[in-house]
Length: 248
Image 1 (cartoon, one colour):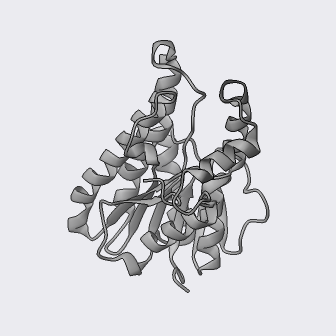
Image 2: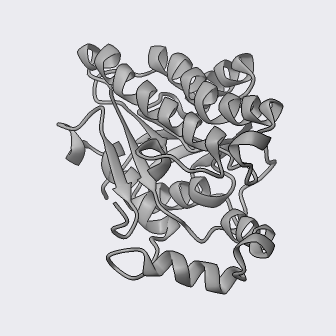
């Protein structure tokens, strides 16, 4: 059991990739806490897991939730920062800067707050894993705020690795490509008028752009996070691991 008896908190753990991470970590022996705005994980909460309300935009909420997670578990060995948001398409000349601030507050400031308040709770051998994006590596003309926030998230990971390394705490990130979550399907549906592709066609187009000719799954992202959370990645910190089927 790769994560036997590891104690893990997952922000954004009630839906999408975060929920897949919770289920995979539980299958691999971890106990943990789901931290999210949502009241409950879709499906049954795994045995040995708890739920705590969290709003990553609110630093006080992050601090309280992480400390409550440690109290419930009797310790904390790892934190997965999966909370995030993808905005609607906006060209550069039509950016809504209020929405820009919202995206950055969740995807970048939320990660920074999670790292800040997790760090004092973690000891040697502990890990933080951030769900970043392929847009941590590259830009996108339609979602500038998202690309900016994910570039910032990678900067946080690389800098925090230097800050936390002397204490024996590792921090890494994963970069998913398109993952067929409910959220992605919804975005593809909303873009159909401008792209000319319905959801199935958009997913097929995304798959055609990968080396494997398929898009990666939420479970495969969760597997990568489980590896980075485990002792098998003990020599790895400050890195961004693509889980994209071979887009980059």
